[in-house]
Amino acid sequence: MSEDAVTVVRRWFAALERGEPAPELCDPEIEIRNWDDAPITGPYFGHEGVRQWWAEVADAIDDLRFELEHIEAIDDHRCLTIQQLAGRFRLTGIEVRGAWAAIVTIRDDKILKAIGYASPGRARRAADLE
Image (cartoon, rainbow, N blue to C red; front, side, top):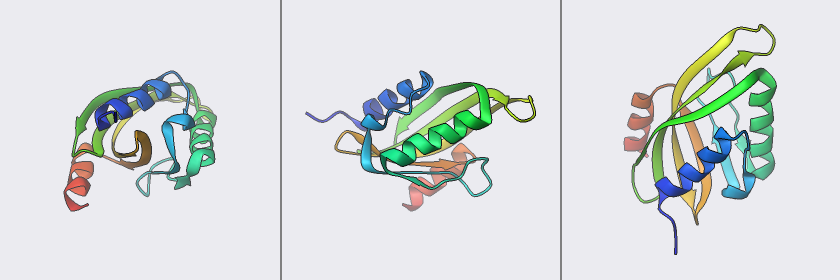
């Protein structure tokens, strides 16, 4: 029996909050991408891309903390998430804390896409256009 999209996405975020990129929870064709002026944009593809994305995030930020703040189903296969990242930039020592939104798509109980947006409003508008 298939899990609903919210459950699948929560499982992946729980792994991220533990500091694990969890490629085993991702579809082999996963795509991770953020908005153009995000600090880490991507795109990243496949399980190796998941590992590379997480390594780049962890390389840039010490004491990395990743928190899912909000999740809602858009439809049977997509969720809107709002998450927060906190830590300290490795190069400057400056504390960082920032929230952004994403549309996360699942296929066969695995994460297929995680597309980041600078704000929840932008993510909502993108969800209406897809």
